[in-house]
Amino acid sequence: MCGIVAYVGHRPACDVVVDALRRMEYRGYDSSGLAILDGDGGLTVRRRAGRLANLEEALAETDPSALVGTAGIGHTRWATHGKPSERNAHPHRAGSVVLVHNGIIENYRELRAALEKRGATIQSDTDTELIAHLIDEFVQAGRDLLSAVRAACRELTGSYAIAVLCDKEPNLLVTAKKGGSPIIIGHGDKQAFLASDIPAVLPYTREIISLKDGDFAVLAEDLVQVVDIEGRILDRE
Ligand code: GLU
Image 1 (cartoon, rainbow, N blue to C red):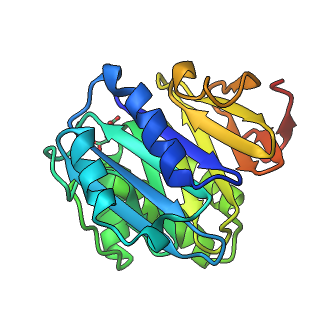
Image 2 (cartoon, rainbow, N blue to C red):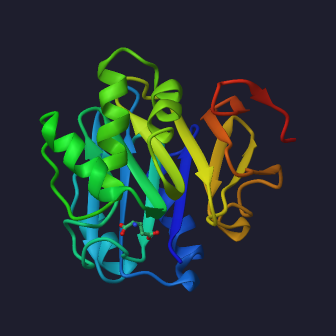
């Protein structure tokens, strides 16, 4: 069982993401990572195999100015596709898109072959990286991030809980859920949180929404909007 977390608001996202990952350590994992996006679209990704402490060491060695962004995603991985390693650790990036994923993409082989045929360079052995490439293709075709994520998810078979950032839309994040992995969203005080489990966000908010299978959501400082795959707004209060 891995953990995904995400934050958008006014605090340095790195602090919130690392704290939330620590609160989900009990779920078990083999590697960890995070991506921090600043308001100008500057993206910093750090990933490490092994304990969360290894990721914290990498962050301590990072120029602090690269970690001031107020949007971020984080992940503790339990490998299903590709061995536990830094290269396979999440987040995975493709072009302007970076994401974390919990679950298993069953049509991995077909998707990988199709993406490579269209010219994508796949850098890891994971099923997850393919989702990033699919979303990036739709962003490159002119879609906004939410619409690109909805379109990409139509092509996936399997289970997923994902959190996605895009450097073209730096002040929001998009999430989607289908299958076994839970996603809860916390919001309030001009910030929004997302996690695989409630304890990760409890220090920050008690306003919590639980996503249902097939839900997508866009999160920003003052916005949490849940939609279905067609983009129709859903009431999940
Ligand atoms: N299938 C993905 C991978 O192997 C996600 C695993 C997870 O849920 O941690 O990277």
